[in-house]
Image 1 (cartoon, one colour):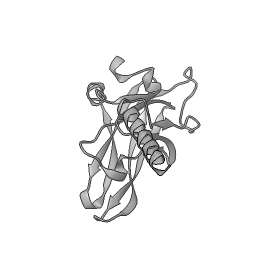
Image 2 (cartoon, helix red, strand yellow; image 1 turned 135 degrees about the horizontal axis):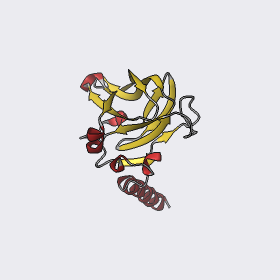
Image 3 (cartoon, rainbow, N blue to C red; image 1 turned 90 degrees about the horizontal axis):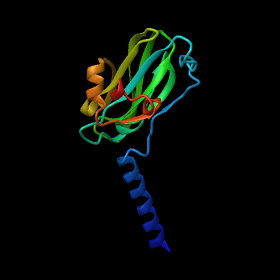
Image 4 (tube, one colour; image 1 turned 180 degrees about the vertical axis):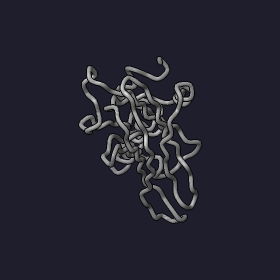
Length: 173
């Protein structure tokens, strides 16, 4: 009986790993009830793509879903190697990226955050990439950075679109 449970657990873990590797298991999830999300496309809005690149190596806690906040309110969880499209109300916003990371070479886990100001105009398209800075013993943190369309196309070449980005991928812009 015990051996059967172990085999079942192994098969389950293998299935999840294979599905995530094939891109069928997406992590990114946008909170469409956020006050800055413009659900009515007939109203003024900016198209904002949030891009999270793959990393060269496993980063522990920093590989978990990244919290993306706009003006102090969580907008989404952004999965590693994924990108999403969100229609936002045009205005200036503070984008904050929050993640948990291991620090000081021990199992001590802490939360890191980094913020930057952005201004989004109606009828414009923006690309925000979440760049990970590996501070080694100080932990990993993410910094939001604006990209051009050219750089965004290169950045998403091997990433999975999630949410609205599946219907409107960057490669088609």
